[in-house]
Image (cartoon, rainbow, N blue to C red; front, side, top):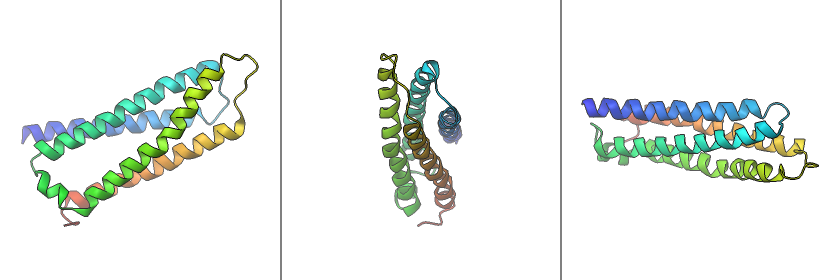
Length: 149
């Protein structure tokens, strides 16, 4: 029971950290970005990736070592909905990551300026990520109460 509580705490902490990194990215993309901000975005995105790995790792630890057991989760459609949403968020996040990397490489050219349309597009993708990720707890609640069996 103690292990289950520790795993739940670690999982929720990773989720909060993931949302914190994503929120920082969104706030940074609201305004103009200078070279320092673009470099910082890359580091923040790396933290976001680490948090996503943490969420996935602790989630699977809960699946295998948690009090309810793997059968409880794997026999429930909300579990698969959560995984599908997590995967969708991960796939969408590839494009902003590639953009941040491209922007950082472009800083070598002193004449380069970040196109506003591209910045808006990346911010829109991050907003889609946030909204999809915000649905995951809904399915978690349904799953935890055994409503999807």
